[in-house]
Length: 433
Picture (cartoon, rainbow, N blue to C red):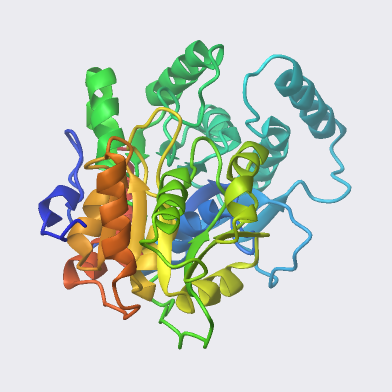
């Protein structure tokens, strides 16, 4: 089992060149208007909704008043004049509706991926309405999906605004965008975004380093702001219920090569060899997974130590985490590369239960776990069966006690600090006008 060590230096906010990303005191002489394009935004139950939510929540403390354009949903949101859901029912503009239908046909017939293009005309139209009421000088767009970046590119050209593209998932080389015909498409689209955006944000240092190597002439635009957590959201472990077995929970969907088979096969071997007691442990997968993953794992379900459950609202998922003995993080993909950090890791660490991760060596998630002070074990795809089995046995021998992350974790991934970092980047762009 890995022993956590201090790798905190690897996570200082940084850029490849040009823009300083260290914390400072922002200048705020009245709030500046900012347009934020976030396809997913609460109350939507997508993990990608929380990052823009944290920025929108804390940016006003640093001089920016975001106007958010997001996807319209059937869920009720408190009436707010700073959140604009599109498309709105009965959109009166016939040309906008026509453009959306054309985008739908284009996406279905020509594009290799679903970029949510039918949303783009509605977002652009709403951005125009907002601009007429309150002109903004800067756009912040976060993806996936890429509909937000495509919208922002058009709005920048229309109104001459600055544009910050928050590319949470890279395009070229993305392990979840693996279609052969998609490679030239991704390369072209990524280059178009890099050429037109005034700043580009990666959420891990590995992604930023790849961008700098691929686009050295644009490296002055590249910055890193990691994912994180809302400091006002308190997550605490709950009392573990009386039950016959110990529970390990994985919260979230499994797709694109994310598969816990490495762990499950080890448990199966250990039970067969009499080194683990049958019925002593249960692995729970909470969330809808790809059919291929479900089919692949069906044999373990029949053996009685694996259960699938449907996705649940965030509050319920957090409660399930808090009441589990252990937590499982599956950080794998079809290309076996370590680029991103699953958002659930920041919830797991605050709950404080022991974490077992399946990841690649020295991945961002691996390094965060190593620096956090939380008890954890890491299984790697190149581990031998014997090595995996010994790690699993040692992990399951841990008591389900909680451990609080260290001060490095609380400081580095605080959403308020990250909003301040974003505000400093925005200040640098606005000052160049």
